[in-house]
Length: 322
Image (tube, rainbow, N blue to C red; front, side, top):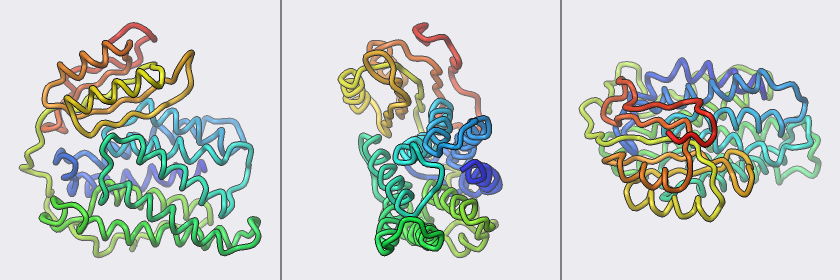
């Protein structure tokens, strides 16, 4: 698992520019590659520092760190994916085909439920295809101890993820019009292939992305001149499940791309990571501040990915607001 996240960090660093270049959904702000890379870096650092042989404990630590430092839609969804992947692995020191299938299924459910308005043709569709292929393949083997079963399950996972990435172009209108595949979907494909390679002691499949529309190195940055407007708001806040549900409803009223995921349990509730896009940060922040005391608040212009955040308040003590 440590090798996996290290490989994912390297491959996303190498591909971040091309992922940024084809990033036009949900907004054309050209930062999907950067967001995924920085979020995976946070998870990989935590995994390297974890002193445990328990796969669930290790990935829980990595997922929590990724969630606390998640960037953008894609980074937040990766953090949700990683945290959920850990849940069926607690108490085990060895990955098997069935455990992999179970973990991917859990990650699929958690990722879809984290979004207020999940959309096919994105990372979600790629994860769904990967989980389905893993379940189908793992279910063909009577024993759960076979290394061959794990290898075949990992290979089927990546192949189905690749097919799902190709299909994203026809699932989303903006992608169809631009004749490109989804950037977040490609990023998840790279992450899954890193898992396959690390688990089997093999190299990444560099030819995996050959022929994907918009991914040729000479292709232009599709997002350039896009109509991204408004801001992206991210923060961490302690809330009860009921208060979190209420906040989600309010954020849906004033913004879009709402993602809320529980990071860890706290007294009478959970520590939540909140993500929302809004035309104006004012109403969304009023709802967030009314719900509790947010920390690690970042408000960033969607239309200017290269500029500094409007406001950042990271690492503040609990209860101090923003």
